[in-house]
Image 1: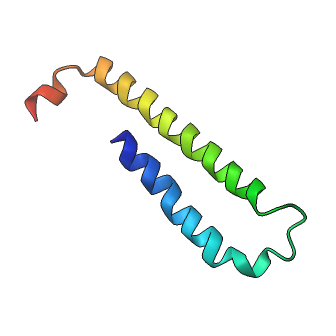
Image 2: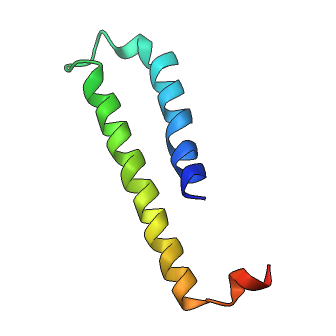
Length: 68
């Protein structure tokens, strides 16, 4: 599930960044790599937030996962 959240949060953003963002690369005041690095950082942050939330829910309801 963590890997799925990592892919969902990042794949569409990176695709849109390189396809639609090409039009604004000339107007950016920074290099192309800086926004891409921000995207990568938030992919990792989002995946870790999801991991913490899943651990919290698992500790709160330990039998719910065993029933499914």
